[in-house]
Length: 255
Image (cartoon, rainbow, N blue to C red; front, side, top):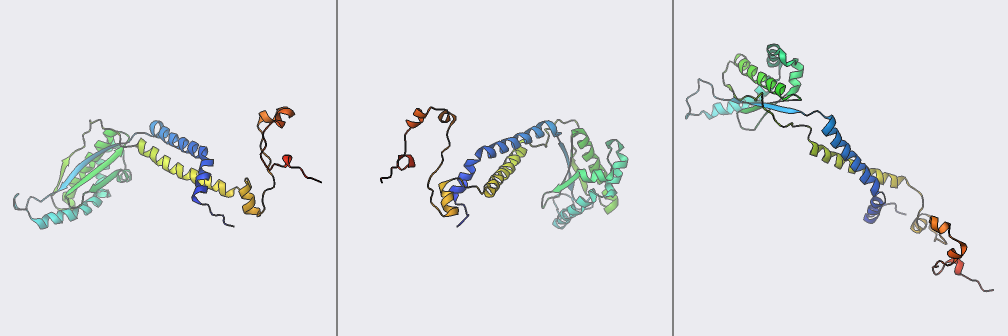
């Protein structure tokens, strides 16, 4: 005997417990929405952009040195690492005590990125207070621009733009639609998996096909489930009900 389920059996299993799947998915999606809207604090993002340009000793504009540009681009990765080191963040913490961050906390909050083959770096800080995020990222950018001159003896770092402190941006997190979508997909997978687990663990015999498959014997008779109305009906009413051909009550044996 094969215990493998074909496609129709899979669909039948899902349909049989569809209410359980729907209830679980709706509950999880609603819980994700409620948590995102009412329990998760909004997070704001502030950023600055820094460019690594030519040094003042390079030829004037119009006589670009491609080798120098390529060198500046390769230096981006080095600068990205230097920004998050104590050489920079220690000075940020000491020069801007009003921010209330330690070097370790600043290192975790600062995110540095760059687009390939460009001389521009982006510094990003996220916080539940936008003003504090803007002040922090501006402070790190300013200190980095000053300190990199002493570390590499160069003056090729400029700040393209500071984060506006008094802006009123929209929060970047929580992303309510994304959280609901993730909850929907994950809960649907869990619910379907749980339903198939229940079906796999259920070894009871329910139909004539189960009797034939597992016992290899035909079904001689079945006891039907009666509704409360049928159970309370009078004997004459039950006698008046229709019968199917082949039922034992309608069979007579000649002697």
